[in-house]
Structure formats: C-alpha cells, structure tokens
Image (cartoon, rainbow, N blue to C red):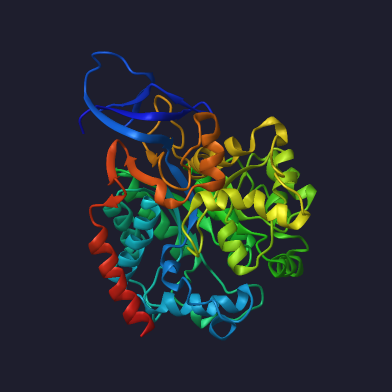
Length: 460
C-alpha cells in the first residue's frame, strides 16, 4: 500500500481526544507516527472531516456460526429457559451447515463486526467435522473457511482452535456435539498442522489454542495443550466459571472449582484468557491477577443466557485486566459490552458509576481500553492503540451522529462509551487499508444475500 496520513478532526491519543493531529501509516500498514500535522508531509493525505478517530476494537471471543441463531431462541418453547437447554438450538444450527455455509455465515458475522468498528477478532472455533462426525480430507477445512471469511471482509483473525474431547464428567457423548469432538492425538496433530500453515505467513492471521472448558477437556489433556502453546508463545483461551453447574461438576471430578483447578496446576499465565469467569471467589481473583491472566467478559451474551454478573469492581481492584467478546452474537456491539460491565453492577447494587476511579482510572478510558488494548493483549496482537509501531487499525465516528452530537472533545470518550450507537461508525481501516468507507463495505450486498440464503435453508 502507499503511505498515507489520515487526518480527522479529533484523534484519540493517550486517553483523550486531541485536535490538529494526524496518523501516519507506512507502506507496511503500521503506524509511523501520531501527532500534529506537518506542512509538506509526504504521502497520500486522507481527510476525514467531521469525524473522530479511535483505535480499532478488538473482539476477544466469538463463535461466528452462532450468528445464525440470533432471535431464534428467545422463547421457552424454542430453547427452554437456561443455558443448558439453549444449547439444543445452537446444536441444530451447527449440524445444519456445510463447509461453504460456515464461510458465508462467518462472513456475515465479520461484516457486522467491521461495521461496528471491530478490526480484530478471536474466533473460538470448535466446529471441526462433517455433520455425521467424519473427518474432512483436510481436518482444518472449517478453520480455514472461517479464516478465509475474515480475510474476505478484511478484519484480522486470531483462530483459537478449540479442543472438545468429551461431553462432560461421566457423561455419554452428546449427539449435538458430533461435529466438535476430536481425540487428543487428533487435536494435537491438527492444531500443529494449522500452526505450520499460518506461520508460513498469512497476512492478518494468527492463532492460539483453546481447550474448550474443564467439562470438555480433562486435566491431563489440558496440560498437554497448554505446554504445546507455551512452547510457541501462543495465547490460550478457555471457558471458565460461566455457570454455577460448571463449577459443581468440576468439584465432583477434581474437588475444586474450574479456576482453582487451573491455578493449582500452573495453567494460568500472562497468555491465558478466561472467558466469562463470572462465578469466582476473591481468592480465585487473586490467582488470576497474580498470573496476569485476562478475563474476557461477554455481557451481551451473558445477559441473554442469564449467566450472571461478574464482580468487575472487585476484580479490577485486585489488578485483573479485561477484554470483551461478542460470543454468541446475540448482538455485535463491543461498546455495548463495555458499558454493560458497569451497568449490570448498577442494576444489582442500585447505585451509579460503579467502576469510576477504581485503581485511579477514569471509567470511560478504562472501558474503552478494555475494548481495544485489552483485547489485543488477550490475542497476542500488536494492535488496540494509536501509537508508532502498532498495526494501523482504527475507525472513525461521525461527530454529528445523533447519538453523540454536541459532545465536546473532553466529553467525547464518555459519549462514545456510554451513549454511541453503531450508526456513528463511518470508516474502518485495518493494516492501513480502508475496509469500510462512509458506513459501507464493498462486499456488503453479496455477503448479506448469501447469508440470507443460508438462513432460509437452515430454518425453513
């Protein structure tokens, strides 16, 4: 690409919006500089008048195929009244998709992310086999379909290849999980093959390991997977303490909760991310903080499933870092996830602004940081901040959008985090390339049409 200088009215820099600054992008798609505009600067100048620029949002946890069940599980007749019965609707969608469908649904999911200012995604991918449980000629066929979907849309992807070895402690195989299961040797062989291919150099693609959960991966297998990932310095993501029943089952098998089990066996590190981590104790928070592990909170999914509310105030006070994920795609709006981390606590405590000034940080800066730099740390990316040497991933918002109009520069961070609608997102740049321009993606009509065809076929 040609070097360029992006010149909005306001740039989010060092925790605040400043005017008169530009972001210089080099030919490799990296940020070369952020600062006052220089007369006579070389390179293409991209004027973004009436707009403010922010670092791209980083989605730490996504199951792209679950976009297909949005609003189709919102009655008790369709999916029961809890997480465990909701899974039946999810399984139906997973069983219905062929390889090309997986691609088309993932493209729709990633398109919606791009239009919401998300520039990177951690895709927690566990649909591996054919509907009858047999293996594709290439066992990583569906992983590659999801990767191709992200690259088609233009967003970065960290493919978190999931190990799903069993239905749970002392449980027989679940027919709905037929496409998820691999043996441990199969998983290790397949993730190694995918790692070799990705390390060969796919632009915008990275990977990590993901033992699905304590219920789906026995402890010895989890240790082997974690060791493999540590040798390669890859991120490791795992569902943990999402449901009380999960902790109870872990206690029956191991005499410990899921987080206690991970901590006692050295499975919490700075490259670990615990997805959800809702039902945890103060001692478990200490273990997470001591390891510098990340919690990926998914409030829009967690409220949809009735999972519960993480005590973010206590966790932050202990030094735990957060990121956010769209998870089941009940909605795709990472700023909504960010504000709900605080707003859910407000409802429970009948107070306002719970997370303000915890550990001396302004609430809006904190939540925006979790949605950007926090996600970048979780996925091992060099993104999430507008600074020299980082990937040139950012988005702009229309300062005249009805949801934030009238906010002064020193009020804009709070306006974005607590009041902005997705309609305000106008331009999205990944690696210096504009993938969304003035609110539209170049492949939008095609992607929406193909997704509609898949949806109609699955649910007819």
